[in-house]
View 1: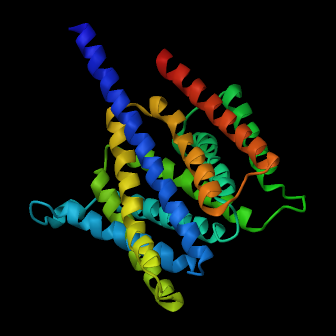
View 2: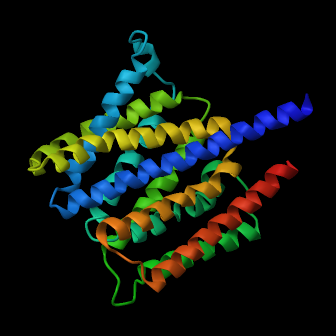
View 3: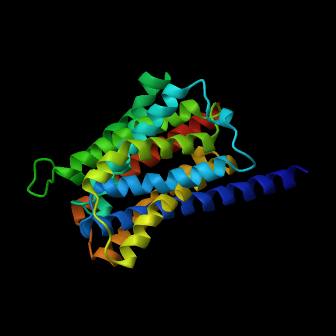
Length: 299
């Protein structure tokens, strides 16, 4: 019976890993589609609105299955739920603006400093203890970001700062998600993320709206919400099949996906500094992951 239980756990972990890889594939398709559309001249606010409008429609349909019960929308932690949604929306807008100026590889590499920032924020916000190994990894990760953005070099672009702020938004978003985990249903959080994004971005989208001129532009724009919703849905479900310390290394598939799509779709080849900085960021993230896993096993 013990062997059978271990096999079931292993199978569930594998399913969680597959879901994680699928989630970041959807996120990569989303960013690649947005990059295509911003290069075509569509404003970031319009694209962010379409991303959340689709997300909101799907979430509303999901939460309304079996009869719409308005009590499911209530929460004793509404302030945190709305703050979490606002952080996600802000992160999306910053990322979409940055994609107008930076390559997919650069934005994804900077974004992956978010887990490192989460580790630093876990001390004041979650009351967790961080030892010297993880503090070393945190400093190493920020050094990697500096290598990528090169603030004192000729290659520096101001949009890289938007990606840095995006990483901080994602870090705070992750902290809020950890605090709300087990308190708020995932579908409820999905609903509020879509609702906040749709309502907040509507006036900005109307003010900057450009009607798509080709079927491809229409298809990509209408699909943005589906890509975002599917990615978050798979990401949430993956954590139901495998623990975070098992899934974390597979998040870096996102960077691989975007490096490939950046080359195939846009012909962009990352330079040596970007690759070196990305490697440092990944290394620091894996150091933090390994240390947290060791502490979890001891606990």
